[in-house]
Image (cartoon, rainbow, N blue to C red; front, side, top):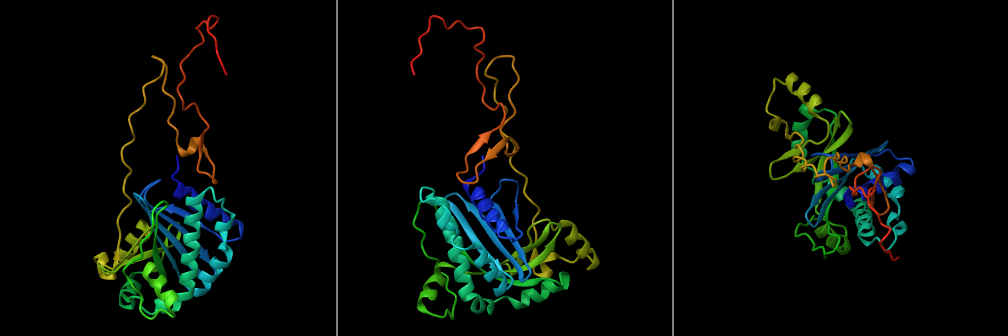
Amino acid sequence: MQSPIDVWLLAIANHLRGKGLACELAYDDFRLGNLLALSVPTPQGLGELDVRRKKKGAVLIVCAESLAALRLVTDTLGPLHETVRRLENAKRKFVHRIERMVEHLEATFEERARHFPKEALQRVHELFPEAAPMTGIEALFRAKEHEPESVMFVPGAPDRRLARQARRYPSQFAVKIPTGSGERAALFQPELGVFQLRGDVEKELAARLRDKGDRNLKSFALAHESKARPSAPAPERAPAVRGEPVADPVTLNTCAGCADCAVCLPDCNAVDVPDFSGCDFSGCSFSS
Protein backbone atom coordinates (compact mmCIF):
# COMPACT_ATOMS: atom_id res chain seq x y z
CA MET A 1 0.00 0.00 0.00
CA GLN A 2 1.20 3.49 -0.82
CA SER A 3 2.12 5.72 2.12
CA PRO A 4 -0.28 8.65 2.69
CA ILE A 5 2.49 11.17 1.91
CA ASP A 6 3.03 9.59 -1.51
CA VAL A 7 -0.69 9.81 -2.27
CA TRP A 8 -0.91 13.40 -1.00
CA LEU A 9 1.98 14.42 -3.26
CA LEU A 10 0.24 12.75 -6.18
CA ALA A 11 -2.93 14.72 -5.41
CA ILE A 12 -0.94 18.00 -5.41
CA ALA A 13 0.74 17.04 -8.70
CA ASN A 14 -2.61 16.20 -10.30
CA HIS A 15 -4.02 19.54 -9.13
CA LEU A 16 -1.12 21.44 -10.72
CA ARG A 17 -1.39 19.39 -13.93
CA GLY A 18 -5.10 20.13 -14.08
CA LYS A 19 -4.21 23.84 -13.96
CA GLY A 20 -1.78 23.49 -16.88
CA LEU A 21 1.60 23.05 -15.13
CA ALA A 22 3.90 20.15 -15.97
CA CYS A 23 4.99 18.08 -12.97
CA GLU A 24 7.37 15.19 -12.34
CA LEU A 25 7.24 12.92 -9.29
CA ALA A 26 10.30 10.84 -8.40
CA TYR A 27 11.88 8.72 -5.68
CA ASP A 28 15.51 9.69 -5.24
CA ASP A 29 16.55 6.60 -3.28
CA PHE A 30 14.37 3.67 -4.39
CA ARG A 31 10.77 2.95 -5.30
CA LEU A 32 8.45 3.78 -2.40
CA GLY A 33 11.53 5.08 -0.60
CA ASN A 34 12.10 7.94 1.82
CA LEU A 35 13.37 10.67 -0.56
CA LEU A 36 10.58 12.06 -2.72
CA ALA A 37 10.59 15.00 -5.10
CA LEU A 38 7.94 16.96 -7.00
CA SER A 39 9.54 19.04 -9.78
CA VAL A 40 7.57 21.83 -11.47
CA PRO A 41 9.32 23.31 -14.53
CA THR A 42 7.85 26.64 -15.67
CA PRO A 43 8.80 29.20 -18.34
CA GLN A 44 10.09 31.39 -15.50
CA GLY A 45 12.31 28.67 -14.03
CA LEU A 46 12.22 25.49 -11.97
CA GLY A 47 10.33 24.94 -8.73
CA GLU A 48 10.79 21.84 -6.60
CA LEU A 49 9.39 20.28 -3.43
CA ASP A 50 11.62 17.72 -1.73
CA VAL A 51 10.20 15.44 0.95
CA ARG A 52 12.44 13.47 3.30
CA ARG A 53 10.27 10.95 5.04
CA LYS A 54 10.94 10.44 8.76
CA LYS A 55 9.60 8.01 11.36
CA LYS A 56 7.04 10.53 12.66
CA GLY A 57 6.53 12.80 9.67
CA ALA A 58 8.78 14.44 7.12
CA VAL A 59 11.18 17.27 6.36
CA LEU A 60 9.85 19.50 3.56
CA ILE A 61 12.06 21.70 1.35
CA VAL A 62 10.57 24.12 -1.18
CA CYS A 63 12.93 25.93 -3.57
CA ALA A 64 12.56 27.97 -6.74
CA GLU A 65 14.81 29.38 -9.44
CA SER A 66 13.13 32.77 -9.54
CA LEU A 67 10.51 34.84 -7.78
CA ALA A 68 8.40 34.79 -10.96
CA ALA A 69 8.42 30.98 -11.03
CA LEU A 70 7.43 30.91 -7.37
CA ARG A 71 4.55 33.31 -7.93
CA LEU A 72 3.27 31.19 -10.80
CA VAL A 73 3.25 28.11 -8.55
CA THR A 74 1.61 30.08 -5.73
CA ASP A 75 -1.17 31.34 -7.99
CA THR A 76 -1.72 27.88 -9.48
CA LEU A 77 -1.64 26.01 -6.18
CA GLY A 78 -4.15 28.35 -4.55
CA PRO A 79 -5.88 27.43 -1.29
CA LEU A 80 -5.88 23.74 -2.19
CA HIS A 81 -6.22 22.69 1.46
CA GLU A 82 -9.72 24.18 1.54
CA THR A 83 -10.85 21.46 -0.88
CA VAL A 84 -9.66 18.71 1.50
CA ARG A 85 -12.28 17.44 3.95
CA ARG A 86 -11.64 18.22 7.61
CA LEU A 87 -12.04 14.51 8.35
CA GLU A 88 -8.77 14.05 6.44
CA ASN A 89 -6.94 16.24 8.92
CA ALA A 90 -3.41 14.94 8.26
CA LYS A 91 -3.70 15.47 4.49
CA ARG A 92 -5.24 18.93 4.98
CA LYS A 93 -2.40 19.87 7.36
CA PHE A 94 0.24 18.58 4.91
CA VAL A 95 -1.17 20.58 1.97
CA HIS A 96 -1.67 23.69 4.11
CA ARG A 97 1.92 23.51 5.39
CA ILE A 98 3.22 23.50 1.80
CA GLU A 99 0.98 26.43 0.89
CA ARG A 100 2.30 28.45 3.83
CA MET A 101 5.89 27.59 2.91
CA VAL A 102 5.37 28.77 -0.67
CA GLU A 103 3.71 31.99 0.50
CA HIS A 104 6.46 32.73 3.02
CA LEU A 105 9.22 32.00 0.52
CA GLU A 106 7.60 34.42 -1.92
CA ALA A 107 7.61 37.15 0.77
CA THR A 108 11.27 36.59 1.73
CA PHE A 109 12.77 35.29 -1.53
CA GLU A 110 14.93 38.30 -2.41
CA GLU A 111 16.36 38.64 1.11
CA ARG A 112 17.19 34.93 1.34
CA ALA A 113 18.72 34.87 -2.16
CA ARG A 114 21.37 37.38 -1.06
CA HIS A 115 22.93 34.67 1.13
CA PHE A 116 23.34 32.15 -1.70
CA PRO A 117 26.80 30.40 -1.64
CA LYS A 118 28.18 32.09 -4.77
CA GLU A 119 31.68 30.65 -4.47
CA ALA A 120 30.35 27.10 -4.58
CA LEU A 121 28.20 28.02 -7.58
CA GLN A 122 31.27 29.21 -9.49
CA ARG A 123 32.88 25.80 -8.98
CA VAL A 124 29.71 24.04 -10.16
CA HIS A 125 29.79 26.15 -13.35
CA GLU A 126 33.11 24.51 -14.30
CA LEU A 127 31.21 21.23 -14.82
CA PHE A 128 27.67 22.48 -15.44
CA PRO A 129 27.84 25.95 -17.05
CA GLU A 130 24.04 26.01 -17.33
CA ALA A 131 23.52 25.51 -13.57
CA ALA A 132 21.23 28.16 -12.07
CA PRO A 133 20.87 29.16 -8.39
CA MET A 134 17.71 28.25 -6.50
CA THR A 135 16.54 29.66 -3.17
CA GLY A 136 14.30 27.80 -0.74
CA ILE A 137 13.15 27.09 2.80
CA GLU A 138 12.79 24.06 5.03
CA ALA A 139 10.01 23.01 7.42
CA LEU A 140 8.90 20.05 9.50
CA PHE A 141 5.68 18.11 9.07
CA ARG A 142 4.25 15.96 11.83
CA ALA A 143 0.71 14.73 11.46
CA LYS A 144 -0.12 14.33 15.16
CA GLU A 145 2.43 16.34 17.12
CA HIS A 146 3.21 19.99 17.76
CA GLU A 147 5.97 21.23 15.49
CA PRO A 148 8.61 23.23 17.41
CA GLU A 149 10.26 26.16 15.68
CA SER A 150 13.80 25.78 14.40
CA VAL A 151 16.60 27.61 16.21
CA MET A 152 18.02 28.79 12.88
CA PHE A 153 17.41 32.40 11.87
CA VAL A 154 17.73 34.28 8.60
CA PRO A 155 19.00 37.86 9.23
CA GLY A 156 17.34 40.84 7.65
CA ALA A 157 13.75 39.56 7.69
CA PRO A 158 11.44 42.48 6.69
CA ASP A 159 9.27 42.53 9.84
CA ARG A 160 8.75 40.76 13.16
CA ARG A 161 6.08 38.41 11.83
CA LEU A 162 8.35 37.25 9.02
CA ALA A 163 11.25 37.07 11.46
CA ARG A 164 9.31 34.63 13.61
CA GLN A 165 8.45 32.57 10.54
CA ALA A 166 12.09 32.65 9.49
CA ARG A 167 12.96 30.73 12.63
CA ARG A 168 10.45 28.09 11.62
CA TYR A 169 11.58 28.08 7.98
CA PRO A 170 15.40 28.16 7.73
CA SER A 171 16.88 28.95 4.32
CA GLN A 172 17.94 26.24 1.89
CA PHE A 173 19.83 26.65 -1.38
CA ALA A 174 20.19 24.53 -4.50
CA VAL A 175 21.34 24.63 -8.11
CA LYS A 176 19.29 23.57 -11.11
CA ILE A 177 21.03 20.70 -12.92
CA PRO A 178 20.01 18.94 -16.17
CA THR A 179 19.32 15.20 -15.79
CA GLY A 180 18.10 12.39 -18.01
CA SER A 181 14.55 12.89 -16.72
CA GLY A 182 14.47 16.69 -16.76
CA GLU A 183 15.84 19.52 -14.66
CA ARG A 184 16.33 18.86 -10.95
CA ALA A 185 17.41 20.79 -7.87
CA ALA A 186 20.71 19.73 -6.25
CA LEU A 187 20.43 20.81 -2.61
CA PHE A 188 23.35 22.52 -0.86
CA GLN A 189 24.99 20.82 2.13
CA PRO A 190 26.67 23.67 4.04
CA GLU A 191 28.58 21.36 6.38
CA LEU A 192 30.36 19.84 3.33
CA GLY A 193 30.28 22.85 1.01
CA VAL A 194 28.77 20.81 -1.85
CA PHE A 195 25.51 20.47 -3.76
CA GLN A 196 23.99 16.97 -3.61
CA LEU A 197 23.02 15.73 -7.08
CA ARG A 198 19.69 13.91 -7.40
CA GLY A 199 17.77 12.20 -10.15
CA ASP A 200 18.89 10.41 -13.31
CA VAL A 201 22.25 12.16 -13.63
CA GLU A 202 24.75 9.27 -13.83
CA LYS A 203 25.32 9.22 -17.62
CA GLU A 204 25.52 13.00 -17.98
CA LEU A 205 27.83 13.23 -14.99
CA ALA A 206 30.20 10.52 -16.24
CA ALA A 207 30.51 12.15 -19.67
CA ARG A 208 31.27 15.59 -18.23
CA LEU A 209 33.81 14.24 -15.74
CA ARG A 210 35.67 12.47 -18.56
CA ASP A 211 35.99 15.79 -20.37
CA LYS A 212 37.53 17.24 -17.18
CA GLY A 213 40.13 14.49 -16.82
CA ASP A 214 38.05 12.58 -14.25
CA ARG A 215 38.70 15.15 -11.53
CA ASN A 216 37.25 14.54 -8.10
CA LEU A 217 33.58 15.54 -8.05
CA LYS A 218 34.04 17.51 -4.83
CA SER A 219 36.40 19.87 -6.65
CA PHE A 220 33.29 21.10 -8.50
CA ALA A 221 31.40 21.55 -5.19
CA LEU A 222 29.21 18.57 -6.08
CA ALA A 223 28.44 15.20 -4.49
CA HIS A 224 26.53 12.20 -5.79
CA GLU A 225 25.39 8.85 -4.42
CA SER A 226 23.90 6.10 -6.54
CA LYS A 227 20.35 5.09 -5.71
CA ALA A 228 20.17 2.63 -2.83
CA ARG A 229 18.76 -0.79 -3.47
CA PRO A 230 15.51 -1.63 -1.67
CA SER A 231 15.60 -4.26 1.05
CA ALA A 232 15.04 -7.90 0.13
CA PRO A 233 11.37 -8.86 -0.38
CA ALA A 234 9.54 -10.66 2.40
CA PRO A 235 9.33 -14.47 2.10
CA GLU A 236 6.38 -15.93 0.23
CA ARG A 237 3.24 -16.67 2.20
CA ALA A 238 2.22 -20.29 2.71
CA PRO A 239 -0.91 -21.31 0.73
CA ALA A 240 -4.13 -21.54 2.71
CA VAL A 241 -4.95 -24.92 1.19
CA ARG A 242 -2.12 -27.44 0.97
CA GLY A 243 -0.95 -28.06 -2.57
CA GLU A 244 -2.48 -24.93 -4.11
CA PRO A 245 -0.28 -22.15 -5.57
CA VAL A 246 0.26 -18.97 -3.60
CA ALA A 247 -1.49 -15.89 -4.97
CA ASP A 248 0.74 -13.15 -6.35
CA PRO A 249 1.60 -10.49 -3.73
CA VAL A 250 -0.23 -7.18 -3.87
CA THR A 251 1.86 -4.46 -5.52
CA LEU A 252 1.20 -0.99 -6.87
CA ASN A 253 0.54 -2.62 -10.25
CA THR A 254 -2.25 -4.77 -8.82
CA CYS A 255 -3.90 -2.12 -6.67
CA ALA A 256 -6.25 0.70 -7.45
CA GLY A 257 -5.26 3.49 -5.08
CA CYS A 258 -7.77 6.08 -4.00
CA ALA A 259 -6.04 9.49 -4.28
CA ASP A 260 -8.43 10.90 -1.66
CA CYS A 261 -8.06 8.43 1.18
CA ALA A 262 -5.02 6.35 0.21
CA VAL A 263 -7.04 3.11 0.44
CA CYS A 264 -5.47 0.41 -1.71
CA LEU A 265 -8.06 -1.83 -3.37
CA PRO A 266 -6.62 -5.17 -4.55
CA ASP A 267 -7.47 -6.09 -8.10
CA CYS A 268 -6.11 -9.61 -7.81
CA ASN A 269 -6.52 -12.86 -5.88
CA ALA A 270 -4.47 -11.53 -3.00
CA VAL A 271 -6.48 -13.07 -0.16
CA ASP A 272 -6.32 -16.82 0.40
CA VAL A 273 -9.74 -18.30 1.14
CA PRO A 274 -10.10 -22.03 2.01
CA ASP A 275 -11.93 -24.21 -0.49
CA PHE A 276 -15.33 -25.09 0.98
CA SER A 277 -16.70 -26.68 -2.22
CA GLY A 278 -16.84 -30.19 -0.69
CA CYS A 279 -18.43 -29.20 2.62
CA ASP A 280 -22.03 -29.96 3.66
CA PHE A 281 -23.61 -26.93 5.34
CA SER A 282 -27.12 -28.45 5.55
CA GLY A 283 -26.88 -28.89 9.33
CA CYS A 284 -25.46 -25.43 9.95
CA SER A 285 -27.39 -22.34 10.94
CA PHE A 286 -26.26 -18.84 9.93
CA SER A 287 -27.36 -15.55 11.46
CA SER A 288 -27.01 -12.10 9.89
